[in-house]
Image (tube, rainbow, N blue to C red; front, top):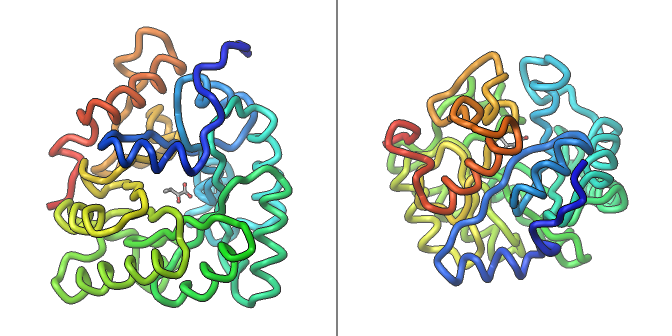
Length: 270
Ligand code: KIV
C-alpha cells in the first residue's frame, strides 16, 4: 500500500464546506482494508461500509441477511486501511427496532471505527435519528429506494415517481433534517425530485440513481469497477477507461463527480 496521503481527515465540517462552496464530494462503498486505502488515497471523501456487502460479497439476493457481526467485522477492516476519509456504516436490517438495541448497535459500529451511521426509512426513523444524533452519533438518513424494505416495496424500483409519493419524500426529508440527520442519502428517485430536495435542505444530499444535482454521488464499489453481475441504469464502469488500473478508475470517478460529468443523462431517471 502506498503511504502517500492525498487528503486530510475528512469530517462533517469538510462536507458542509464543500456543499457551501457549491462543489461536489465523492463517496464509494468499501468492505476491506486494501480497497479502503486505495479509495481514500484517490480522494474519496466518504467511504460507506454498506450492507450491500450482503449482495456483492456474500452473494445474497438482498441485504436482509446481513448481521451486526458482519458489519462490525468489515468496519474494522476498513478502518485499518483508511487514510483520512469519513467512514460511514450501515445499521443492518432490524438492528434499529428499539431504542436500546439502536443505541447499542450504533455505538458498536462507532467503536469499530465508523464516524457516522446510516439508517433507512422516512418519518418513522425521526425519533431514532434524534436519539442517535443527540448522543453524538451523526446520522445519514437513507430515503427513496430503501433496499431493507424490498419485500414491502415489491422490488428494486424507482421511488417518488407520482406526485403524492414525491411530496411525502420531500416532507419526510425535511422532518429527518429537523430530527438531527447530518446527511441525507437518496437512492433511485427522479432527477427533478432529487434536485428539489437538495435545494430545500441545508444538509448535504448524497445521490445514487438520483441525477447530477445532489451534493455528492455514491456507488457500490463493485458497480464502479464493473464486476457486479447486474448493471442498473445509474451505474458506470470506471475501470474500462482507466490508464492506471483500479486506483485510476477510482480517481476517474472522483474527477467525474467533481466536474459533474457523472452522472450523465443516460444514468438518470426522469
Ligand atoms: O449498502 C449500500 O451500499 C448502500 C448504497 C447503495 C448507497 O446503501
